[in-house]
Image (cartoon, rainbow, N blue to C red; front, side):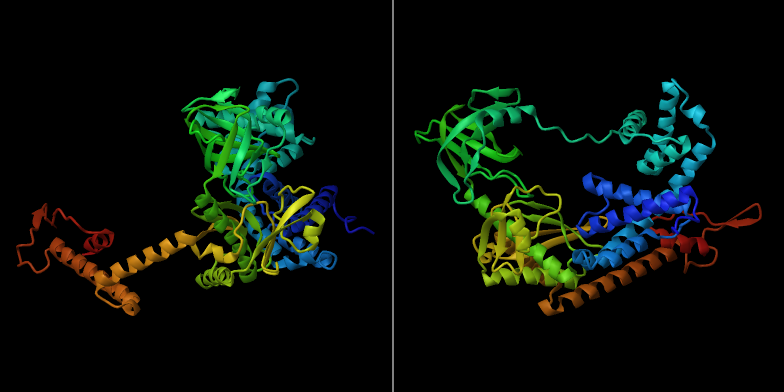
Length: 557
């Protein structure tokens, strides 16, 4: 006998949807995917909301329930999948957060949807051949999304139920987006543009000239590099004259192309003959296709030509700063896992020469004590001056060795595994550039911590001279404060607190004085300015300078 035998067909279907989506949800969140608005994060949000909708609408489960189903999945599968069991608390908390949020949205949105559908009949909405009528109804649906935030996937599910027929996702999205564009244009709201597709010119260049060889792991200067392709805003060209800007491809290069959060290298291109006839500035380096490295250049002197040999020189000072921040990012990731828990997973990063930014999964604010522990742990690894090594191995070997991979990142059959020390503290798959030893980082300082999305936090930090300059600036501010308050360092907090108390007391006394002046308190009888109008005593004055509290007190006198 099946557990579904006593349920209606609709209820049984709802239960199957919930069971299936709970499995997908639990494993996805354990892998570091969180509900969001883009890519795989949006896919997860859609399946979670679909399950929650079926539970609320068809099973009467109006209180949070889906997180319990997901926890049941973890409980029953944790022996076969230990990594799932290790994330049990995190999975439950993240599902509950999303469920509560969606429940609030759904209460309003579903009510509006039901109102709309209760006024219609399917034959009125989608009459055969009446495209204008269908477009008009899609506009009404799009208004619910635009005005009340009713999720579009919920709108589609309700529309299918209303019409008693399936609607292809692509068909629905095309009609819905068209309607949404119309109403947003009418209201003056611009629709977010989608990412630009990769230019076919890049594929053509790669096909004609082949891969660019990256040599920047070992060196920051290549004496002879052949220019294999040049393009500007109009397309492929044979040369760039003085003052011209465009993209340049070299057969081999020391310039690292932006990837994995690390910014692209900058530097210079010279004529290989060293006769001073050419100088071009490399402002950025990127890789639109695997194997193709584009140098974004501006020719400062001479003419850069296809087929020409040039000397390529990376700005070593900026590269070193980037390397410090990149290795520090790995140390930060490991420290976050150790202090906050194994549920921490990378959700994005930026590694620039003057700062690093690290996004990660975590479901609650980080305390000042935890931030201090994280910072101390990273700096302790820096002080150990542990060697930083890179090994090339197959992706299978890397995962068996315990290396951390970023979910969703595409890796080839051979990967670079970066280890700090013996790898027990930090071992990750990474194709970026790094310091030779942790001591090269110098120092590490967290500058900010904030929540950027549900279950995702962002830490910004600085290293090296930027950290030292920050320490120096903090010292200067403290010294200036001590001088202004005429106190000693140990007494600074108490001095500030005393000053705040005095300020509050002074403000209170000023307000009381203003109130006395406004009400004429202390004036001799008959001098209060009262007038008798129609047998009623009236006091009229222009009162200035009272705050809201003073005005309330004045009205009560």
